[in-house]
Amino acid sequence: MNLPLRRPLVGLAIAVAAGVAFGLRSGFSSSFGWAAILAAMVPALSWLAAKQRQPPAQALNALTYALVFLAAWAHAGQCRVQATLAALARTPARFVRITGIVADDPAAEGTIPIRHNFRLRVETSTAIPRIVRVQWTGAHDARRPAYGERWTVTGRWVPPGHGRREGLLLATPRGMRFHSAGHGHPIVKALLRARRGAALILSRGLASHPEQSGMIQALLLGYRHGMSRELIRQFAATGTLHIFAISGAHVVIVAGLINAGLAAAGLSRHRWFLALGPLLILYTVATGLQPSAIRATLMALTFWAAPLMRRRPDAFTAVAFAAVVMLAVSPEELGRVGFLMSFGVTLGLLLLFPSLEYRLPGHAADAQTAGVPEPVAWRLTRFGWRMVRALAIASLAAWLVSAPLTAYFFGLFSPIALVGNLFVIPMASLMILAGLLSLAGSVISPILSETFNHANLALATVLRESIRLLDGIPGGHWEVPPPSPWLIAAWYVVLLVAVAQFAVDRETTAKIEYGEPIM
Image (tube, rainbow, N blue to C red; front, side, top):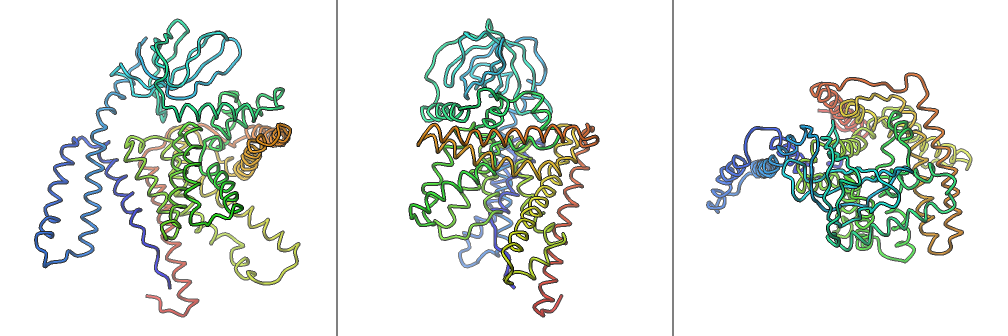
């Protein structure tokens, strides 16, 4: 029997996450963490001094994980100052005045008055988090902020809400004062310009269908300002709003199209990473650097870099690498809903999908018919059934992981999501594919691009009406009080125990099949 793959990065990621959690939640300062690191280095130095002795492998591994845990603790402890300032900022102030640099592509929504939204990287105030969301209303001809400009904003401060990572500053045109431009990165500026151009391409021929056009732009580019609040509420209530976060599905489809082009060009698979990596990074930056997109891109880069390094691609290692990088850059991400949902659902799919697939009816039948000649109609029918079953299992696995977090952060319990995702995920994938073909077709002919846009219009219309139908089902979703963290922890412990039991059962079954003794 083959031994399981060694995954040292998984252990390091667990140590990093534990250290960051301890550093953010404990009352100890980061100096204690650095002192503990120096103390832990004593046995390592003693082993190095005694060259005639080789340290035991278990002890060396334990020391490595302990040092990683302490380093993450110390690093996260240094972020407690920012966390303290963010806590101070939760006390609402009537009016505040801040100066900062516009950090994204401002979006305008509504008609008259127009509501503008953008993120501001704060430079002056110490009682406000480093990044805030500014929302102001003004006339159509008002001076609009742009990426890389420095502005002073005066308005009413709304502190970060439950699970919301950024505070909100509500301003009026009188509270907006422009200072200077040219403070942003030129590559990011060019990518944001390309993003606006892509939005124009995706809206060709859809001027009379603004809601569907807004859905398409939100799905491919991360622009949500074209979607009505009622439509966003319906997607949230049915547990399907996640499709508008630039995440794994988007990255997989984009990477698939890029890889298809590289394969057609005759490039060796071991070298795909050299072209795939930069293109995925540019796509992630252009769509707003959403946490889910960063996670998916880091995973894809790690996965496709393995053949270049003569290694076997491994999904768990890719997830662990993405977690380590994101927590090293920003330890406070560990407590944010986007990070928890993104990594939680991904790990849930990797861990729960095999268990559920193995236990649900149909798995044994597929194994028995593998390699057996069948009529084409039967093969197509069996293939379609396997696809539906796999989608149902993935939906169930994602819901089991995300339901406690959704109830805790949003006070919402949506069993209808089990049904909604069966339909929404394939539709969203088709819309992403049609949108990418529209962008690619625009290079050849505007007519070709508009043709794919009209195909996307039909898909978006069906999706919108389906979500409205699901939202109207009685008992499909309801508001609940946030569950206790201990109850959430118990929920995940039960899931992990079930996964472990599945692994034991499967190993026992394999031993019986191969006639090995069961210990």
